[in-house]
Amino acid sequence: MVEFEEVLVEELIDLDAYDLIVYNDEVNTFQHVINILVKVCKHSMEQAEQCTIIIHYKGKCAVKKGGYEELKPLCEAILDAGIQAAIV
Image (cartoon, rainbow, N blue to C red; front, side, top):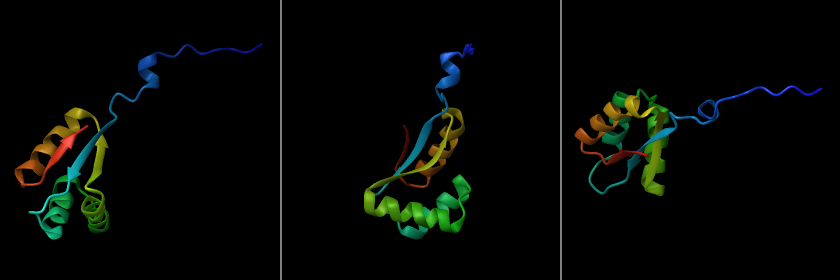
C-alpha cells in the first residue's frame, strides 16, 4: 500500500525566490562595481569579478538570491552607489 503525505502548496513553492539583478551601464568602472559587490553583497573578490564580467558582456547578472526583505537594503545600497539594480 502506498502512503501519501499531505503537503501544503506553500511548502512546495519557494516564496523567497527573488533575484537581485545588477545592470550594465557606460558610467561605472569594473573596479567600482567589484568593490560594491564585495562590500554590499559580501562577495569574494573572485565572485565579484565574475559577476562584473557577466554584467559587462550579458548586460545584467543575478548577484544574490533571497527573500524580498533581505534583498531590499542591498538593492538600495547598490543604487546609492550609482549602479543600476532591481529585485525580480
